[in-house]
Length: 346
Image 1 (cartoon, one colour):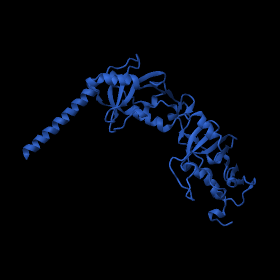
Image 2: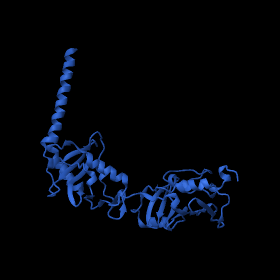
Image 3: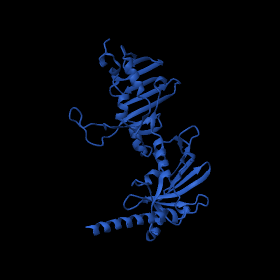
Image 4: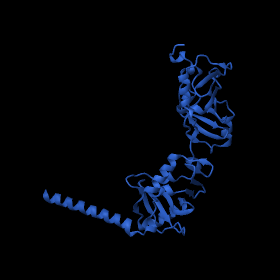
């Protein structure tokens, strides 16, 4: 029994020594110019350029006023930038690519990788190529390049985030829409001057909420263009509070033109117009989406439209997908604003 325990202890020691030697071999014997992927000073990064072999590319740039921009035109998603920085800062070598596999991996990187350029000011401080996943999906093939000469390293590595087993390639996407902020609109309630909701199929529920001055509210019925009586001020305040940071799910810029035209030429479910105190407005049209699964209505008949998502046109330019879960509370019946409907005495 004691002999078995001693043998097991020796085996553990040998395993530990082997691990340390392998780690030392990776982190110290390999020249820095071959393995220095990570960049810890992410606060100094001013721009990041990503380009793939299919010709897609995107430029992310720090905005001096705060936040990041995509291709100098759009606001970038904060969560996407945060995730990218986390990976750049914490890139770690999982292992070296074996000698026999090096040629194959380098060929794969040459034909199907994404080039990453990281700048501090106008100076290129990191340049590397991100390939596909290892067979076990727990590492990602990468190849470093010299930022001064732009000459590629001769040795690829399997990279990871220490303590994690995720595949890193999806972090380095080259589709500009994947980096863009997905906020449909965001209004501070006192800045809202009016919200108009027009239902195309139940016009009697259409309404307009007005705030002519702070904490002074009116609700108009669009059915007969008259003031709605006995409104619940608390209900109106609560309603306007929902207009802060309202987002959408995804862009539909790649939809085929004939399909998009067919949707936009159909009857909308409803429209929404929001105006602020400076008379700037956001206009949205919402269209029914074909069901992704069979749903039955109250009469047991198949639903015509998807119950979770809608097609939405924002300011006659951005075509996106929105969720009923998000916009449902922004589109109540007009009775929502009535005192009696909320159990409050007249």
